[in-house]
Length: 158
Image 1 (tube, rainbow, N blue to C red):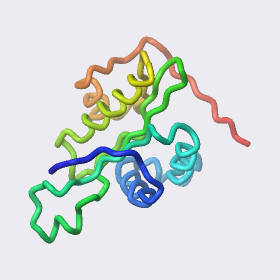
Image 2 (image 1 turned 45 degrees about the vertical axis):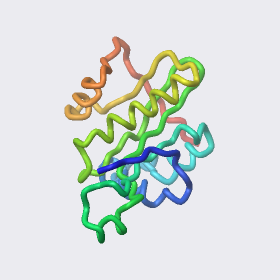
Image 3 (image 1 turned 90 degrees about the horizontal axis):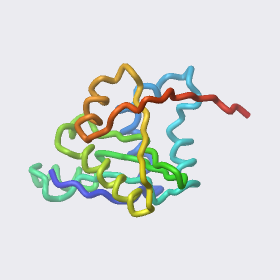
Image 4 (image 1 turned 60 degrees about the vertical axis):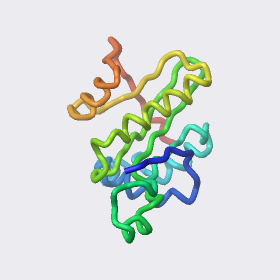
């Protein structure tokens, strides 16, 4: 499968949300109203939207001709990045379950890393839920290591 990585555009929202609903089961947990994919997209479009990337299926995959016309351009991955002038962050790395283990996640991370490096970003952080062993192994394979820090958080509810 050929894949193109490009910036997110507003017309991608429904496809991205569909992917995120598969990739992030916590978005389906109604007891977590802060896990709102539409709000995540809206917030990202308000802050460094140029660091929101999607991977799309290209025309050079091995599908049949009929499948190519139906699937070409389909979103198969996403990643968001951010840079506050001190360190960068990665968010919402997702790959379609049917397209995993094809290098798409690795390419998305590398693309985001390059975009942050071009901005002068010296360090990149990300957070993974502690029970996601497969995700932790993926990032370890890309050179990410646990920092000796405690991640703290506080919800700022209006």
